[in-house]
Image (cartoon, rainbow, N blue to C red; front, top):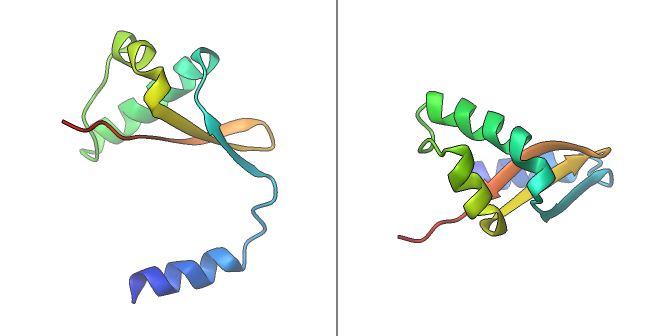
Length: 77
């Protein structure tokens, strides 16, 4: 049910200005802030700047009008 509701809401939004792309080293400062925020909220593990630089290839970012507004990474243990 929740997924269906989310799909309906997302379908109503104009996402044409949102672009998802691989993260770049120039995104590190923004990624640091996002990762730290969610780590402080208990939603993900903290990651150091060195870890982010090392693992930049595992990140994707969402841009809205050229501003990075989200990020994602999958690390398989």
